[in-house]
Amino acid sequence: MGKNDIFNKSNSNGYYRGTRKPRIWPLLLIFVLVVGVAIGVVIYKLIGEEHFTSQKPVIAEPEPIETPVEEVVIEPDPSDLVDDSNHIYAAKDYAYSAKDVRNWISSVEPYTGEKLAFLTFDDGPSPTNTGKILDVLKEKEAVATFFTIGTSLENTVDSGVILNRILSEGHGVALHSYTHVYDRLYPGKTVDKEYVKEELDKLQEKIREVTGKEKFMSHVFRYPGGHMSWKGTEEADAYLAESGIEYIDWNAMNGDSEPTSRRPKDPEALANFVQESLTYTKMKDVIVILMHDAENKGMTVESLPKIIDDLKALGYKFAILR
Image (cartoon, rainbow, N blue to C red; front, side):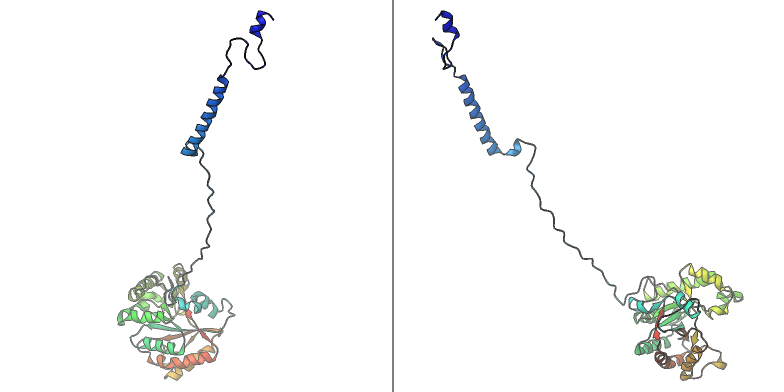
């Protein structure tokens, strides 16, 4: 073997023959890498993963359980006044629109329901008779509509107490002008619509004042002397209807305001007058009975029990106007 062969050829163990030392740096490198990895693992475990990654572990939150919410319906107190009306909640089922009733008794619209009787009292309240009428109505389990006058409210002590009793016992309060003075309401026998409206607004406010019921609002009006007695009513009717006020007349009466020559002379005659008046009306299934509760109408109070009993015997149910 030549000299060059000694320096250029290695044996199978990877080192040169002669005096060259074996190479150990690859082993050192591997050792350093292993130790570094081990140290890194230990640090990772001790310090925590969040220091080495921007991704935080995703924790699955349980979906909220929806609890069904029951809708709470607050029922109004039956004794509370229906807002912007002339009656309490307890009277809603037997309170009928004045416009509907007017159309029924005048045969403008057909009526096919049960027989209805609307007891109405004009010109009150009075210190004596209104309370007595309420006593009879309560005893007989009947209801009525009271057409009030502003001056009667002014002149009656505790008029607010009387009106609140009317309302609380399930009756209706309606409008019959403030003064009841024909010359002011109907100059030249023609309706002064602006003046009538002015009086009704004043009356509404007076009722709110004496009752303490700020949300009282009556939509029912009876012309003093009756709608049929005056000129210019059609224009006035439309004018009042714009404010939600409807007029109502009657198709039966007890005769307590008839001229003296034909006015019934005793309570029984007053009651019989109602039945007689029904013979003259075409619509007998819906009747609006004109009566009065002014201070000089004591016989009306005395006749009322028989009037109610007679109507019940004929199958009538009692209702109020709204």
